[in-house]
Image (tube, rainbow, N blue to C red; front, side):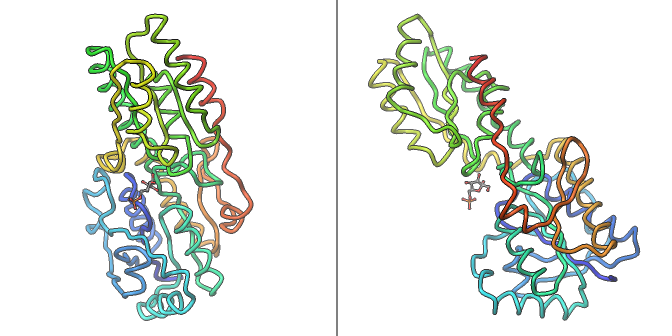
Length: 319
Ligand code: F6P
């Protein structure tokens, strides 16, 4: 192969720029030409492709987001759209592609590989919900944002004897929430893998208040219930002022942590090597601190991301 492309797709994640930079610099190191595709699969379809040199990725390692831009593009499920995308890649003489994103992005990479166009996936999402890797790029940074938010909420909660419900992203994965709960010392944790019984939770909080507990933090994974409604119900049952805070997209922004930058750099460089070794349809991961790669179809269809039960249990033991 002589020319490779790189794109970021789905929700952005801090550290994606470090991964792009690694793909570009590793590609150039191996005498490849590297092209950046803007706005993910959408830009691929619309032929928004430009050549990148080493200076295109100067100073991006410190920046959150993705300088290539990202998009959710459900139209890519349509084979005619994918064929046009391959046509655009061929127009630029691009032989292979690195896709940085979550499971939807992996699906696109798998479909392109099935059309005979080799792709390597790199896990980029704050949700940590991808199989075949212990961590996804952006998770650590988002976790630090959530922990800092919990610390701040604790200050004001304890000053006012309040209860705080803090909603944390993760889509349908509780990793961000349970890790933030452990690091932030939250008293109650609600994650989708376990589910929750609202009456039981309120009873527990009520008993805590009755025993003299002055304040509490409830860490709630998004998409489980309405955080404001839950806060209202807790207040009604306990008589204690309760507020909901939805961290939302604040968790997706900001300077990537050193851990995310290093992992992204390792994964980006390995993805290029895999393409040079003739692989396609693989995805890179980090397992037990080793860079590994798996069949992308296995990752999407067969490998199940293990629920981090230990972290969840720990948050319950330590509260
Ligand atoms: O996948 C990343 C993520 O931030 C999820 O945690 C969240 O559910 C979703 O994206 C939000 O998507 P959007 O930015 O499209 O609103």
